[in-house]
Length: 193
Image (cartoon, rainbow, N blue to C red; front, side):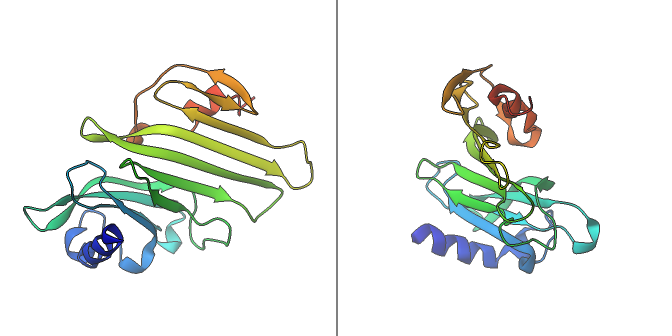
């Protein structure tokens, strides 16, 4: 609860601190607060929509607390990187969640439109003063074909995981979030076959 209160208080200061991100507070779709860099202070991750007329996807913005300065500092700005643009439909809202180990998850999904429904989760960790993708989870189903689904849970750092209940193994990778491409995990999971 303390982290949530701290995040809310810190987010109130965003218009002043977020000049580089440059979005109004009403465009915030999701946020999570946790101690990403394990310095004992609450940090913040935000998903904000792009301008409705831009046609771009939403963006991810990560802030680390600077307690000595009493503010949050934008350390990662990834506009047009989170699937989904305005207007966001029900069942397509992106999600952020803080994990107890200091990582956070970024969820994108289509759980409502068309026959192909899917959910993708990236587990993001702070390592060596940057954010990396530590895990990738994907599941899908076809509303018209009960055998048309897929699933994969992959530890990107080890290259090991499971796809359709079977063990899989690929190259262990240390991929910065800013360099992430879904194809990295999808190829190991066999999702692009």
